[in-house]
Amino acid sequence: MRRYGKHTDEDDIRSRPNRKGTRPRTNIRPAHEDAAEGMVLTVDRGRLTVLVDDRIVMAMKARELGRKAAIVGDRVALVGDLSGKKDTLARIVRIEERSSVLRRTADDDDPYERVVVANADQLAIVTALADPEPRPRLIDRCLVAAYDGGLDPLLVLTKSDLAPPDKLLELYGDLDIPYVVTSREELENGDAADRVLEQLDGKITAFVGHSGVGKTTLVNALVPEDRRRLTGHVNAVTGRGRHTTTSALALPLAGDGGWVIDTPGVRSFGLAHVDPSRVIHAFPDLEPGTAGCPRACSHDEPDCALDEWVAEGHADPARLYSLRRLLATREHTEDD
Image 1 (spheres, rainbow, N blue to C red):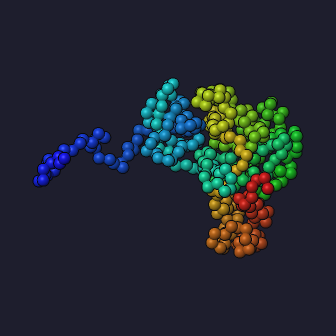
Image 2 (cartoon, one colour):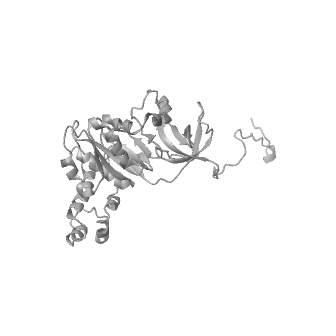
Image 3 (cartoon, rainbow, N blue to C red):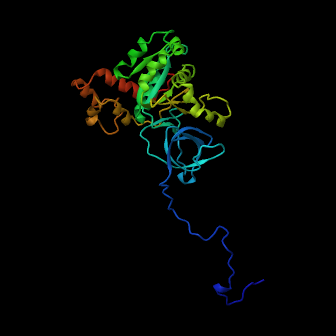
């Protein structure tokens, strides 16, 4: 049945109102110039715990940020309810530019890059000298990730009462990496914490290590109980009653001494995301020698200019060996 005549015009056509409104869409987003600044302390299932001034605020990421995710250590801008009261929720509207990023992949064939920590100054690689045995390949991989992400490395060797540190320290002597050696007794009486704190003063330090090396025990010794209360209610989010290092957690040191970021224990440290050309930046004595390298040089091939650079006496051969050993970790698993 024909609803209109043969000679209809647009005035005869009945239009249905737009239920979603008639306001045109726009790509212009609010600037949020009055947003408060904060630091992300932990992330759990889409909810972020953020320190704003001296308050702990629960927040979620604004839709306008799209796929960009905030991680522990990020400096963010927030709007909404910033009171920190129970059952309140703020909104993260901006993630500030990061000064450093610690990344890893599940393995060397995994294209998915996991961003672990942002804006850390250094990476503390915690390794037991025995029980479990040290894994130099894993240490090398953590060093590559630190150099690639713009973090200064720090070696923390635990359980020196079970094995001497000399052999392991000799392996990394040419890298000039600062280190601290501790024993189980020193962890209990506080001496170890005092020596480690000297290396952490005024810095944001991410701690990594595989299970059983004493990483979380050390972190607990470094952060006084009254400082842990600042983030204590974070555990209510996970429902576990205490922090079991299933996600990264930032904890403040006493006074203005800096921050410790405890990360989950790692079984592997994939480096699929690492560009070898960035690792050379951690070797300033070798970097000028790469000027004569062929394009996309791996720095471990016959035409590499670093061999001639070192032969001419510009750098110690041991440093070139260390660089190539670290780069070689990208080609092998840490269990090789």
